[in-house]
Image (cartoon, rainbow, N blue to C red):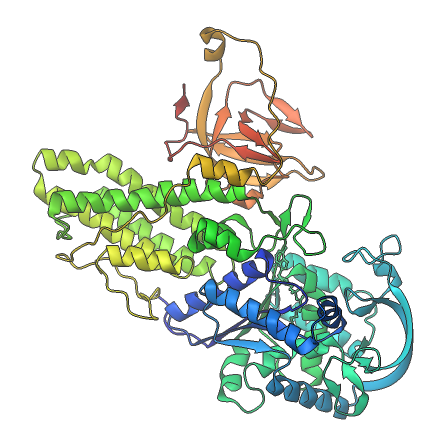
Length: 638
Ligand code: MSP
């Protein structure tokens, strides 16, 4: 398997200090942390940077609102971000602040370079200024005369300013994006930038008069002006590496990958590459753009008053539980709905039930039948071989999915292995082998189980670092401080026979219904459906209910609600379900569902549906009904 590769540099946006950290910020930061840990565990030299964006009008306004000197205010909020990331065990290598003197020097040096290059000029400008966006917005960007992001009417402002000749680089940028299809990913955001670039690109206003905005980095060539906050902020990605002279800059800049949400696609997809080009610098490697966590109808944001604080969430549910949920629930690039109900559902089903129970049950068997010592395996039977082969295949897919930001797929694949280990236990019946004194066979089965669990633990390290370390400790593998088990060199047989296991506390305690109910009560109470008239057993028995596995899922064009599925019910079956508002097609793959199979076929939007999925309506959500543990596709339900 692949070993050390080119150095990897990952960044989060630097967050504005006009608001406190919320789970939207935590999501991007946790993704960055996962990627940083992944690359370190692959043996790649890694640098991970996050930080705070501290200049601009909004910050001054926020400080004034709290009656604090700006400096004191930015120190306070920046400190909160840092403390939050520390509490969330974020393994950043550098926390940058745009008020750091080293950053200020680099911004001024870049401004000099771009000016020398002839790409900065002075001009009068009059236009619609959105204070929320801190930029002039174009007439065509407004919706009903208002900024669509901040829902306020922009102010008409006329002033002399400095401009960056961004328009000059339009054709070059289009060409670069075409030649490097992975420059902006996923593809929908690359297309968004390209479609934006179909319109003539304006030059970028990069200054603000000091008289109006005193809190900013002075322009090196005109002291009456400060630098526009985006021109200042984007440069953090260079200054944090010690540009221009630090060895870190030479080492890490070529492998730079930015993580952002779609709100800041334009500055990162257009301003930033053109700024780099004008400054004579190579471009970043990938811009990885994700969607929003939605709360009810809208994006989570302070102005909408629907913010969830990351520390509250983590204190309540556990850090790794929240990390798992973030990565499993959101398809990178698409929006996802955040709800505590969904979080509790994942914790109980995937973590407490599938993984946690498997771990404790397996360790308990080794304790009971082999006094806690890993036995040496005997000769292998096909089902043992199958587990090894699946572990290998899952590992390879996992290593491909994670750096491609397909976190949900990586986890779905890993949970296939977990499901298969569970099935292997049921089929091999270690308790029976023990009863019948089939010692050799029992040794092989127990070894196969705990070795497969070691693979699960090793693979989970970047996503759930604390729990993975606990699992490894329980498997008798000593934790090396600040270092985990390499992901690149997994080989079957790594767990040494004779190793003593340490059974610890439950990894993921199941959330009590009471707790789940209280948390769910945060959302609107579920409407109680009126009861239907009683039926007799014979009427119920007319229903043919079966469990199936979704093997294909795609949206039906022109419908917001419908998804066309192929469900494996022992044989493939096409079913159309009205679940597109609640599930992404990708998310459904591999999911087991309850299907009414003897419903007369019907056509929905012209597409034939042969059966119906059952789902629960709960609060605002629709939740598909699935079996507690995986069963053979086609299994009847009675
Ligand atoms: N300061 C600028 C970024 C400058 S980078 C050179 C900024 N700051 S921000 O505080 O508004 O952070 C925006 C980022 O926070 C998003 O791009 C995303 O990474 C994260 N998120 C904020 N709200 C979010 C959601 N509701 N959902 C997902 N991510 C969210 O823009």
